[in-house]
Length: 341
View 1 (cartoon, one colour):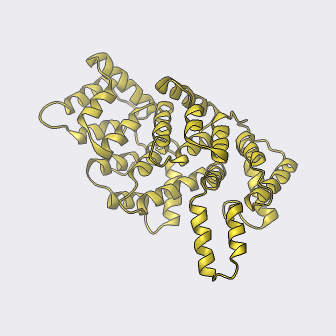
View 2 (cartoon, helix red, strand yellow; view 1 turned 30 degrees about the horizontal axis):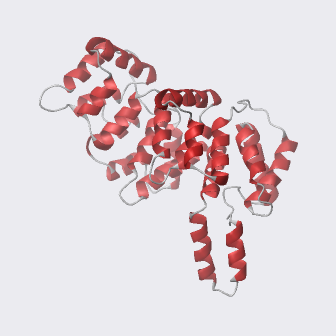
View 3 (tube, one colour; view 1 turned 90 degrees about the vertical axis):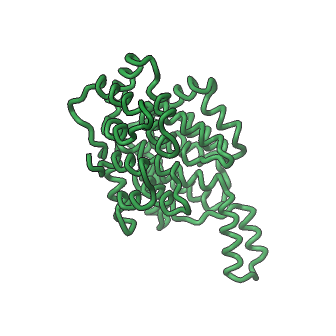
């Protein structure tokens, strides 16, 4: 369920004029901008943006970028963009970070609907004059490249039907790969990139039934690391654990694989964990916090909030109020439906 609270009756012309008024004079009236854009749904924001361009012959986004700054400007700009264009921007930024953030790519490829993913790829090509797959291939290598290119190239069946016999067979294939017995990553990539979400969730459920634990709970150890640990079996348990964790932290393929499984298996639970991580990290991860709230406020943020509350010692609203400040805080709370408007 969405958290955004939007009026049924509104005037896009009045909104455009009030936003322009808020941007004029010696200082920007950020509260006025929040009271308007923080309470408009996608359809309404599109009309406001069109009205602004018709009246002032200027893109609303450019006006906002000139008047606002920091995390507040970024959150408002992302919110104002159409979803496909927003995802294209997020994907490009994620790929061009010093350390690429593959989570963003996986979220877009595995949580969005097939039609939404297709729209993102079209928007990406329009924005950057080359394909998302092309950029992915240029910044990755090996199995991580195969996995990410495969899931972004897919157009999954979107129905609810699934084949239980196939699910059982492929649960065992996933088990063999995750435990490093076969290292047949191509089969795993094929399964995760081509099967429908319903089929994959049946596979994940059977994995738990057959092997006694959730597929996301297993401790994967890369092949070369397993050999290292075996050869040094006389080391203390603490020393062995250190090397295992050190090896895991560098295994991009495994972490991308687990993110794919989590996003397909339970997207709301995944996003609740992203929010907890963003808030609990030193200094707060504003990019992660904004991304989840902005992209889910019109979809399922209410359910994500409830999961967050169950798994933490306080509500998401309280955490945001505590860890953020100023106009940025006010805007996020507006999207959560927790402001005073």
